[in-house]
Amino acid sequence: MSTSPAPELRDLLAEDVAGFGAEFAAKVAAEFAAKVGATFASPGRFGRDELLLAVTSLGDLQSVLDAAKVRIAGELVRRSAAPDDENPVRRSGHASPPALLAERWRIALPAARQLCRVGASTSTQRSLLGESLPARYPLLAEALIPASSDGDHGFAAPSRVSVDQAAVIVRELDKAAPSCSREALALGEKTLVEHAPGLTVEDVRVLAGQVRDRLDQDGVEPREDRQRRRRSLTISTTTDGMTHLDWFLDPESAGFVVTAIDAVVGHELRAVRFRPNTPDLDDETGTGDVPESRSLAQFRSDAATDVFRHAAACTTPAGTGKPPVTMIVRISLDTLRTGTGTGEIDGIRTPISARTARRLAVDAQLIPAVLAGPSEILDLGRARRLFTPTQKLALAERDGGCAFPGCPHPPSYTEAHHIRWWDAHTGPTDLSNGILLCSHHHHRVHADHWDIHLTNGTPHFTPPAHIDPHRTPRPGGRIHLPERTAAPPQRRAS
Image (cartoon, rainbow, N blue to C red; front, side, top):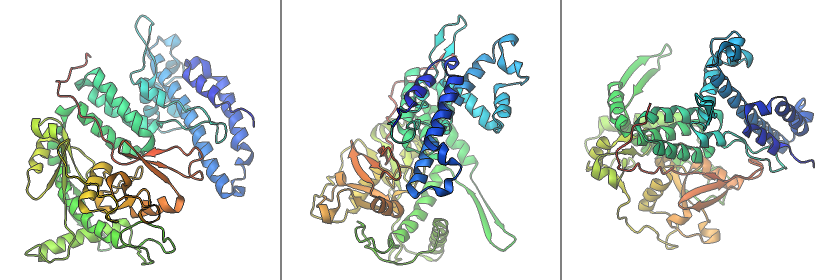
């Protein structure tokens, strides 16, 4: 097998823009022809694993091309401030770098603006005296460059961060930059770059918003006030007689509504059996072939209807047969004491202010999860096969819901899974051997033979070779963000 040119491609991308023009394009074209070009014209002849390998190889190729586009876009932005005779944007007859890219690359103008923004934020700059200055976000710039090839699968491992993820990170860090120190901003960048590889773009958006709020804590309460003013519920009837609800809730209100609905949905999902012929599944309900045709959206609709039906007819909660509704407000001990920082409500992806978290944490009908304080001993060894409710609350605190990478399902939708099987391998029923998984991912872990291990309390999922030829472990569970120090923020100089 010939040596892959991927390391050379990576080296070219790491050089000055002028160093990877025609040579870079030639290497990419040659590698494409060598890896997938011969069979690209007839994908119908691919076998199952060949098709999956082609998907991976093309994704790796796209990572290299995206990295090159970002570099070029950043250089266009830099040179667009040059005099007319040195300005490539003016030379082409365009008003701005995004307009030039939109036309030449035949992409939408918003996509071109995104490339330019990421490129400008991750490219080296020039001072007024012509000196080279580091990129505004150097760690993000490094993460956009694909890793070196392993020589066997595709011509390069994909970039750790995609362009779409990078655009989200740049947008949220730029919002926080005026209100925090350079050191705090660098810590936020490091946190996001470290966790982005195992997340979807939507997950990165949520995480970046949480990082932004920790960097700019003064902006949380005003945003909460704006969210409360925007709350609304509009009821209309469609032409075929269906009732349509448009309901916008602030995070605090959504905590009550979503938690109640999720409690019913989780109760129903746990009653739904796994597919037949899977006796090795480690769940609390056993296995079977009970059919279930409802979609998750229909589950939620039925659950919401049950909640309101119960509220309309019930005079006492005792003896109703409904699952208990447990709303958990998570707040650090430091935030509880000082009133500075942010908190979270289980199942709600938008942070709440310290003021709101402190108010909710003292509600007698809610469970405050105060972190970094004394806790109950939860490990029960092998005395029990099933995890206790208290252990599940602790797993929910650690994993945040389904621990599988990118799964948004809250704790109420999940089951406690033994990493080392309880019956076959005598795995203990304690927190070091348990994770939370929704029914779908519980089945996939067993059926596809994912490997799971905990590292410092973080579950890592290693996919089988037919899903990822590189078998790169993917971190899952809740992302635990560092709390911002109590020192007052230092305003960045403009």
